[in-house]
Length: 271
Ligand SMILES: C[S@@+](CC[C@H](N)C(=O)[O-])C[C@H]1O[C@@H](n2cnc3c(N)ncnc32)[C@H](O)[C@@H]1O
Image (cartoon, rainbow, N blue to C red; front, top):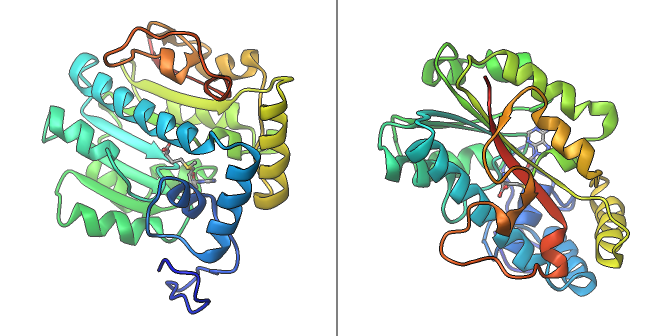
């Protein structure tokens, strides 16, 4: 699939000429499941904000620490990963099932490339599955036969919305969507969410403008709007913070680099 030859194979329903967020993310992570159109946007992003590659790796590390926390410390055994992205390193099911092989993980992504690639690496894993669905269609996601087969919504469930909500406009009502997912799961369930942080920093502005221009999406939000994703829930320490500050593995966080200030995320428990 990689290679800039111009003769790229794409699965049905995928237009290689049109960059996609999932493939752009994969290109930035150095993956192979992307096309020339995605790599072209990746190059423009890197030219404008060279640290964008560190940013996506920092994001992956956050996903991993969150999955590990949910299973080992919060006792969660079911995870719905909305906007999961193309499989890469430290995928949610790998981290979660390393902690408990019976932890169930359902990947949900709107990009039709994700499901076949996820299925390929899941390779018959009875405790994980992937579906192609628009996370904005809550009923379609929660009523999907693959979800109802794997996930028991009467049991505590973690909803992951990491790297997704800044792709949804205010018209999409990301706060309302989150409320609807949380209404479908019992007390003791968890939400993990993130969003690009709106700021006056030139790097934030440059990234937002370029994402809008190239991908037609990218909604940076104020801290209060990001914190509001967790309204009515009990935030897990240290709260809604920049990713490197959320339960770092092995280092005492020093001063943040400017690019590390571009994203905020947190985890909270439904009381
Ligand atoms: C930046 S990637 C994040 C991947 C992963 N969650 C992470 O944080 O590393 C965002 C993913 O959200 C997916 N996405 C965008 N809009 C979506 C929607 N409405 N429903 C489901 N997935 C969506 C994209 O296809 C992409 O794979």
